[in-house]
Length: 168
Image (cartoon, rainbow, N blue to C red; front, top):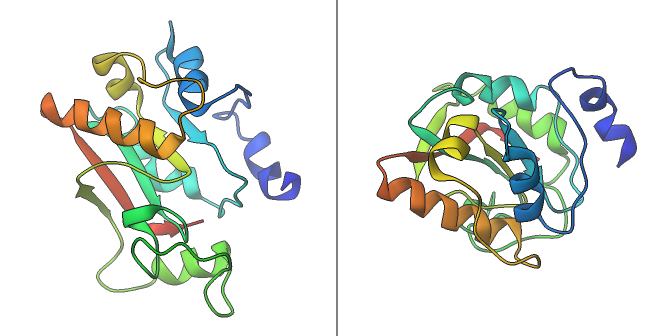
């Protein structure tokens, strides 16, 4: 929703760009640019501080993509893997669940995963510069394009990460 994007629209690190597909969007921005890209291809509500959690990897040469916990992210779906649900968990929303995850012990961190997936994926600048454009036709969903990109990165010794402290 527009209200949930308001804090990000005023963030100097954020530019809003539209395209026909996630792959087209990322490729359009990445061409000639040295910037990290948070790609979103479904209507989502992002929790506060989402970008702060992953700021440390945007220049890490070893990272090609970062995924986040979500209720519809295939193998990263939370609380049920591979079982998307059409509602939030009990009395939680993205803000309260993210806040709860960030208070658990051990502290949430960025952990290696086989491939990035989900409707929101961060593509660090280093990964985009090293691997080139995302592959995929105009209609491909972000989760498929991100998985392909991650596997290409893995072939070159890069890794994809999961932010275990952020739920959207």
